[in-house]
Length: 132
Image (cartoon, rainbow, N blue to C red; front, side):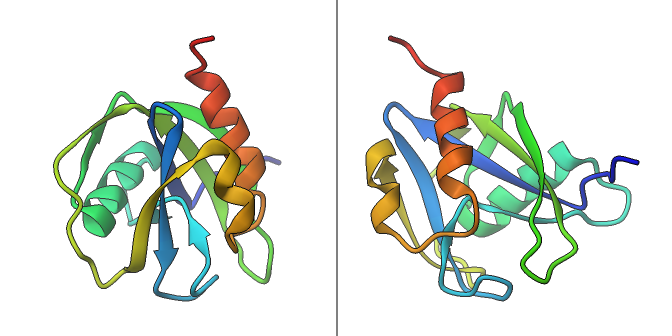
């Protein structure tokens, strides 16, 4: 039986860059990841993704495209629905949910300490918006 997602994240793609956040909370404290978090009662995965990105970065996002669903493991019980979008607006503002943020080029993710499977997720996300 397929488990429903209980968390969501979003790859915000800007040309050849993606927005990564450094987690300020467990699990995966201090690791680089996509913005996102846990679903609240009554939320869809897409509603969660929109809310979490707004809470963590201050950005408004739209035109989300489902990318993949994955079980995270690592001592957690998370089933993560990952989305990707090029549709966002606003200015990134400080949040107590993240330690830092940066726009990272596709090939530079490997130099960062990241959450599990992030490189694979980003490969798919950049492929979704490939213009070559």
